[in-house]
Image (cartoon, rainbow, N blue to C red; front, side):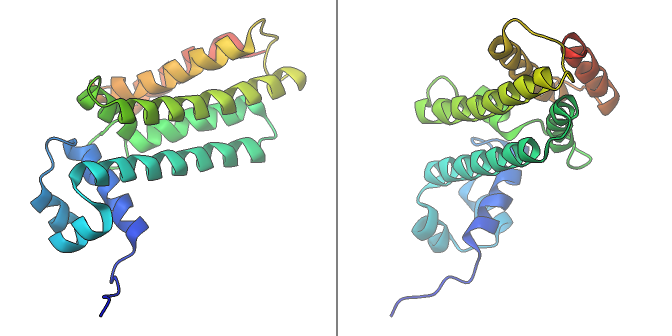
Length: 194
């Protein structure tokens, strides 16, 4: 007889994001996974595979959710510069989701596991590309609407913004507070303001 699952697979993946973000991949034991995720060891392995397989699934879900958030900001955009600020603020808010600043899940993972994890590197690279594509479209929209100053190389500007976006996460891990993050955002965006 086939057992029915008594848990929401996506909700478990979302809990795993928080656990891996706090403790890292290597610092999280299978026992902690089952305790924190609220599932049995057999359910963990039957549903997600081993710890590494779970981690990759968690990263894919995180990437997909982040891409959807970015597209939502882009689709609702009436002011490109403000939408870019919103994306930066989303990153800061994610880093400070609770009293213990955690940084960005993807940045933490790449710092911990690269260069030996090519699949992981590819996922992070894809996520950075998602950010770059949305920021590039917003920059072009902003230039057309005169909300962003004319830029000779909008693609290069989008790459610059992606680099700054991920850099904020590293700054938070190094002790930056919200006030410093706001200053970083202000200075980062000043070259594109009209």
